[in-house]
Amino acid sequence: MTHPTPVPLADKAAPSALRLTGVTLRLGTDEQQVTALNQVTLAVAPGEFLAVTGPSGSGKSSLLAVAGGLQTPTEGTVHVAGVGLTTLTERQRTAHRRRHIGYVFQNTNLLASLTALEQLLLPAHLAGRLDKAARHRAGELLEAVGMSHRADRRPHQLSGGERQRVGLARALILSPEVLLVDEPSSALDRARARDVADLLAEQTRVNNTATVMVTHDTEILDATDRVLALRDGRLT
Amino acid sequence: MFLALRDLRFARGRFALIGAVVAMIAVLGVILSGLASGLADSGVSALRALPATHLAFDKSASGELFSRSTVTQDTWQKWATQPGVRKAEPLGEQLVHAQLAGSGAKQLDLAVFGVQPTGFLAPSPTSGKALSQAGADGILISQDVVKEGVHVGDRLIIGQAGTLVTVVGTIGHASFGHVGAVYASLPLWQKLHYGLPGKLPAAATGQATAVALQLSSSADTSAIDKRLGTQTVDQAGAFAASPGYTAESSTMSLIRGFLYAISALIVGAFFTVWTIQRRPEIALLKAMGASTGYILRDALTQIAVVLLAATAIGTAVGLALGRAMSGSAPFSLRTSQIALAAVLLIVLGLAGAVVAVRRITKVQALTALGASR
Image (cartoon, rainbow over all chains, first blue to last red; front, side):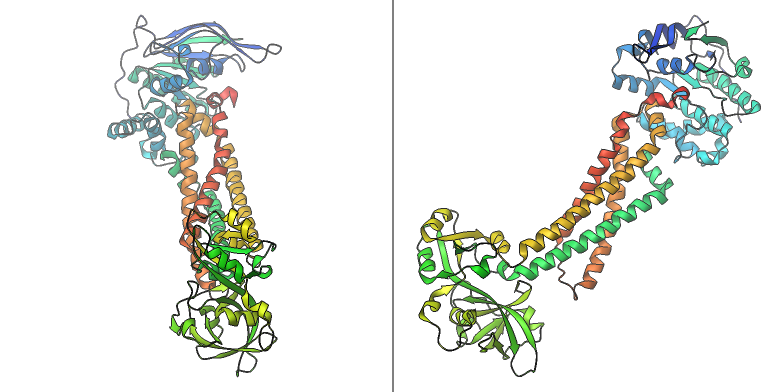
């Protein structure tokens, strides 16, 4: 694996790549309503690696869904790369997500028919930028996450840790301002979980990305810059 | 196409399975189309070859008009004088049983058409003499009768009265009611039609089955029918009036209709299961910023590739099988019908698949996240 020179940690006074202000998310009907997020305010700067911890059902995935524009908050605003997601149409939100947000999903969220290299080329294809530069960047990223020797392998031929590395490289292919990471260690043993967390920290700095990782795994938190806890939809 | 083709390559076993089913349906579609065309040819090719735009039958006849209608000399003479009528001549039709004279027990069924030997309905011979040059007992036989072993110069004994006729020439392929067609002069036809020995009664000499017409667009057939006591049909109507034609063609259409409906259902069912299996991937794609339209286009492209390839292979196999069986069954390949069968299979398959992949629009990107799975 190569280790590109990391850029300095982002200046905390710099404009936020991701900002949630007074975000509340209520789910369900009136009679069985659940408040998944309650007045959440959060700002993440470029190059910052933030971890959000909490037990199951605390609202971690809801936070990622709202931050990435997959779900519209009941109250409050979400800004990604300076654009308020709540003011956009569904189509505009999808396009904004494509350009400015990278998601790293849980263990097996790779497409079964694509090789590791093709997993990285897919976002470039979706964005209409599948060119020589994209292929070069895909090769670089696979090298950076230590997967260049497995570029032609499909997900079923990769281990859990390898899949997670490919997922991370895929999320970074279009150099998004915001990286949202969902339980990256859920299917990994301790050593591999630690390895993936370190890789996330490294890539956050190298790519100057605002990274938010939700996890219940407290053993990978020391790789992050800041840790927030989520309890019953409230950030503490 | 980025995903569509890679999915096809990756899950080639599953796609080969549905492709094989579609290909087999295409084979059946080609064979059924060929049989339908062959049966239609065998039923009405003689009518199709008639240089008439319309036929006028007796008004009181119903159903299979050729066996129930009788028109008189007065009727065709009056038709000839009506406005918009370019030509009007009597046409007789009679299915008969015949025996080849002097050959032992060689028997055959024939459809005898009676025409005026010098009229516009008289066919041009491909060999031998025309009706106008033949004697009173001369007939022209179609290639369908030639295939039965009858040749120019042969004599046939026809009907209960044992009327003797002579083959004076041949024409191309022409059959009616699934038996080979022969052409005779109207007086000879009348003799065969009534099957009476000796001289015909005077009333019988001025009769035919229908009046064959060549009409211009200005002809008001309804008004003329009302005046002359006839019912006029165009060529398609004449086909429907032929023995068994409507029942045969509607049966074949029904079978083909069911075949295509089954095909659409099978393709729809396959892609419904496929789409359900792909839901996590579809959610993932949406979460990555793929629009619903993109995913739909990709899925439909995949389906179109499968349908096109399978239909092309199935059609090729069907054509080969059809050619192999054309000697032993009424099988006729028409490019337009084969193309229609292939297009129908693809279009209906796509329609079935469209219903299936509508589910893509309902998949929520949110489900790509852990807590929602």
